[in-house]
Image (cartoon, rainbow, N blue to C red):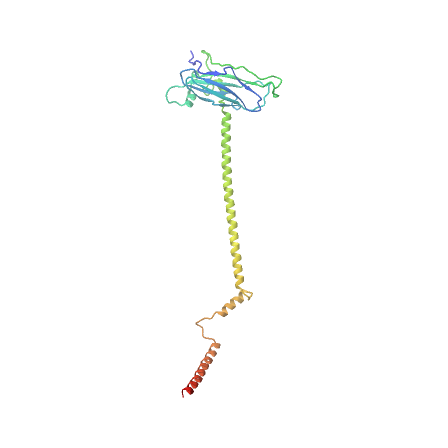
Length: 286
């Protein structure tokens, strides 16, 4: 006998997931999962076309007697009524054991006999007033909720999981793609900020170089103007230096000849003046 559990979750709708177009934009459908048991139930939702759907949430925990609503978003695509639809969804559920256990590890270690699988097919429909409809009519397919029979032995792939699960994805590929895109956008923004910072540093460095060049030019111009003003009327540095040398006299050098000739004349004039003054004074006294 198989240890396959009885129906753990009540799935609404039980027979099909309907998506109503037009499909040029994202289309949403909803699924309700109810836990009618007294156990805590773990669930996971997979799809055969994970790149075309976004499932929120795609896994979780359901407490006893509680209900959760699952949003399933079909990404935009070119609808062809003549194309056969093969999209399917599968809801896996199992009883969560007691104790401190990891849900992720439980899904890795779970035995196929402890899983309850419910498979649903998708239905694509277009409203009657939509111009997107093709002559073949809407693509429809019935969905069934199935579990393996008591005497059936599940086929397994190389990883040890049931072979029927190999065609199903987790339905979060789009979420992963969005996360990757957001990470890439974040890196690009960081690179942009870094480039802007480097650009500001370069501009500041260029401004400093310009200021240094202007200051150097101003100093050179000031030096040239001071040199030109120091030349005076001589017109050349050599004449200015000659004039300065002529004005300078070494205090330790012997007196020049002109000075030697001028000093006795001064002494003689003073002596004559004193003699004349003495004569005049003597006459008045006598």
